[in-house]
Length: 607
Image 1 (spheres, rainbow, N blue to C red):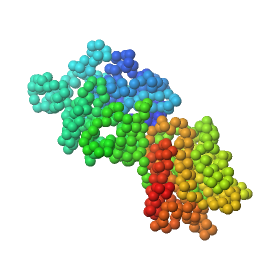
Image 2 (tube, rainbow, N blue to C red):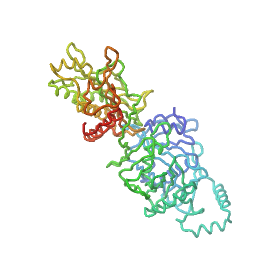
Image 3 (cartoon, one colour):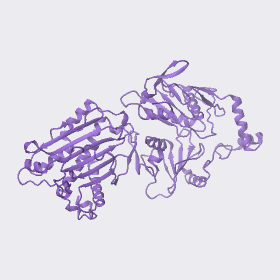
Image 4 (cartoon, rainbow, N blue to C red):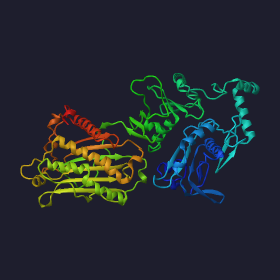
């Protein structure tokens, strides 16, 4: 239920702007039917600056553009989504005007889109609560519209669902209080201000580098001085701490150019990040669940290998390495179309998620080769599986990588048993899940080899989209019978690797297409793949057979931990990649797995 600023932002980030309908405009919410006409109406820039400054002065809020209202009992009620064309709005121009027209520039303002890609989109401008005792002003609307005079000032204030200008007497009172706080006579204070150059730093002209964080001020000043060649300009407000990072907004010296954010993280060189790139970092981490701090999720910018001195990340940077957050090492990369996307740096672990053994109830194959991919998309709650995508998947499955791998297993043993006929089940099929199975039967219809795929959207127990591809040797005896006399059903390590590679590719790249356009979705946590090799059919004595009776594990060398019925490894990586990269990563993961399970002499050259 949407009833406050936090829940409204959550609904917008989940691309559900319709959840705001029925709310009334209030202290933290303003709705506009049409976008600000910044290109052809000079007064629109004044309106934008006034609205943003009013929310900054009023404890924060959000402006939703593309939603019409109705008047009800003298209150504006959000009535219906009109939608606006993203091509008709320049987000960069909005950010630039806010920086230029609002003094000081409000910290953390976010401009984003909400709504389905193919549906009606709304723009939202989030103005977070600002530092205490900070007042935000705009040029007074005098003279020619669109040509603000630098020697005027006006202070907009949010009052319920309306915006009012602070009375002149109140502005004078606040100015007098500030002069008294300086401890010098009024005439002397104004005379000193007049003699100072506009860019000077001091108690009258504005905040100085490090102000607000006395314990970090010295190091922030040192970093600032080393980076002066970047043309950083002057502080736009006091420094603040965000987790372990010390941060400060800087106003660029060249009018109209993006500002900078000075960032200091313990045990790392200082960095200044162009404001648009910094905004991308914050927006990426803001999608983490449970209200986690953005930098605590994605981490802070990490220097390239080698530099131990401050460095700058300009507005035209193509990638940014991030580290130190709960998501682990990752990289933000900008596409040729200007779209940024975060992907994790590949790494391995033995951690198995809640879905690791999904679908095993009632299934006890002799051998299971599984690739399960966890896709924690931020927009997962808006996804659904429709009939056309399900039909498309049915057409692709007989030609999928995992179907080809199963066919090759038979061909290598002199038989032609294609994985061509796929049927629905045993997993449930609905708007929230798909499941298909292909069975190669032995004599008497006994299942010999089975290939199974499934994808499930989040449930109350599982927050990520889960995609899985299994290859099951259900009954080695039945498989041997259908293959023909003298056929060996034990799998070689190279065959296991080929099957896991094909299953991983199918689970990571083919199955997610049933939700639409996976590449357009953003992460709420790092995606992972879990690779498993398990023996699950117990013998007559109730004991699970060891894997080496079903798979030739001799190339891995001796096992110091003794025989076992399960091997598993988790890979944190981007789901989509070139096949050669996936093959290399698979080999590294299997070596990590083998060594962790006691095959201490295992090396990549045996795979």
